[in-house]
Length: 310
Image (cartoon, rainbow, N blue to C red):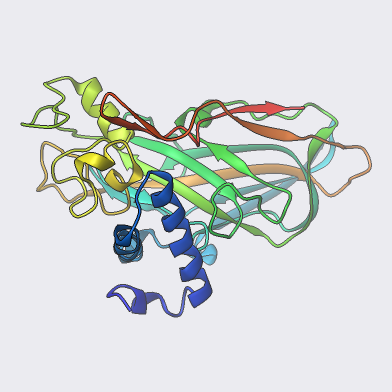
């Protein structure tokens, strides 16, 4: 058993850890890794993920605020879920695995009439700008090895950074029905701090003084010297190997170990009355292609989505 795992024997079952390994293995195969390299990387990445103790939250660590009211939609319940703090150094990153990281949801039988998701600061109120923290993606779905699975067969939500300001409002009379929901779903969250980024170094991917280029490298997992030792090599440029948990984009002041806090906030408006609401089908459409290399850059567009509702 690798060093960090015994710390979590009481929190994660062997089955959960095996599913987490499958998650990582699939991601590595997806970017073209094969052979013994895959298993070596899987163990190293799982160890790094579990070693980031501050960001290993339990469901009971979240807070829920509930209110009820009536409007043209009828009797409505509003539940706001606020995560514990994710803590990242400048340039730092954290990547959660569905089998190990769960987010709370309303329980039982209900119809979601509206929902909003946001990344807020440590105080739990003000939205965090992308210039401070880039949410590469957040996917709320199943508890298994594959981050695009449905949660309990009836719920999946998420996308990239652009989803922060997307309008999720349902037309009156429509909603997403859930039956016998157990009260939590798995989450693949990928957060990258984008502060104090260095804009110049010698060698591969040098931004040459351009802050925009440095920002793109940080956000899209570009190779940077020293970013993720033992994982991020030139061949992994543009893949999650360069921005996994424990990585740190090149920053001006690496000696600064201060961490900034971020929280995930989810607000659901829902009803227990199925009588006057029609089911809405939500589709996430892949507008990218498979992983490939262009101009020596790894492009992985399998999880680039648009959002539609019918």
